[in-house]
Length: 400
Ligand SMILES: Nc1ncnc2c1ncn2[C@@H]1O[C@H](COP(=O)(O)OP(=O)(O)OP(=O)(O)O)[C@@H](O)[C@H]1O
Image (cartoon, rainbow, N blue to C red; front, side, top):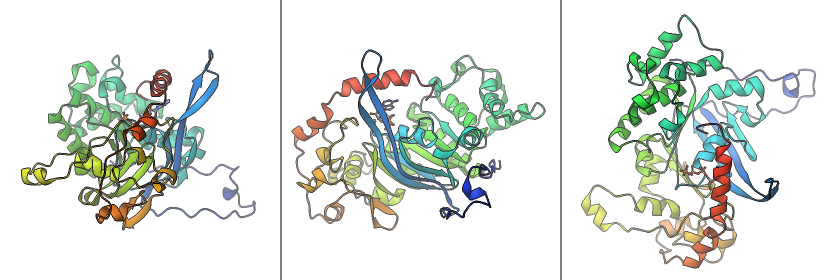
């Protein structure tokens, strides 16, 4: 399948850069051709509303709080972090399924936040999402044929002559028989349903697929099959993936590069191999120390570092380094007051920690985490934040 080579939509006449008569505005340099997605300082904050008519904003959930990353064409970028750190919101903000509060997101050179109407629809067709729970993301009343053809129809791409052939081809590509077309979601296993979800994304010939925990709802025995399928499809169709997962093992075997998120921000980014061989951020180190190693001799000698407490509330993020309340390497008082920027410690390996070198070189040893620090930021009203979240989530379209 060739990707839908939609050239960047022609700039509107109102765009001075497209108008030869307007004074020349220096155009921003286009990102290198191999970069498909370039995100700068993306923020998604959700208001917390109160009052009888929910007309008072009493705060904000800082779900995504300044993430910058690039995704190269044809690669798999794994985004990991514990539940609630903002991975899904980042993916949705990128595709504009939720409106970002700030920052910039370039897709194939076009500024997604500037796109409107037809231009946005066209861009959306090139960026598809595969959801975590295939059952709730598929309409139980629609058979596979209408699920798959719906996307084509809504984008005006349905062709009466070739439509059915296209559907069968796509089913074949995801390993399902043509007879599946007449069947309904409940007639399939979890793995098969996820194949339908993948087919639905693929049928629009996207360039980018944001796969949000695509295997975490599946039996372990079928997880590898679905991941292998995603890999085959990537090779066959030249796809680029943003793979969101909380399971480091999933990302390790599938991603070229990995970004680790903590409380709305990226704390480390590197090639997959580097991250697992030499994690530099304390958070990544604690996450990885919890992943069992199959070799018992290595497993016995490993230093296990336990992650204390829950993720702080994104409605009340800690000052300074967001991880300082749970960090076994925390140093007073810089970690409590200065938010570390993501900086490159080795080629392609970025980390947001003031003391990454000292920790790597063993100059600072881990110590006990003070429970009162953990408590201070998890206690705040997290129950009511959850309630508001659930309420707002109920107003979103299914699967979003
Ligand atoms: N629509 C919303 N309104 C308010 N808060 C939200 C909304 N959606 C997400 N949040 C909050 O933003 C934070 C990040 O949520 P998000 O789902 O992006 O995290 P995640 O890392 O993907 O977690 P999970 O793996 O559990 O999906 C959470 O605290 C969540 O409660």
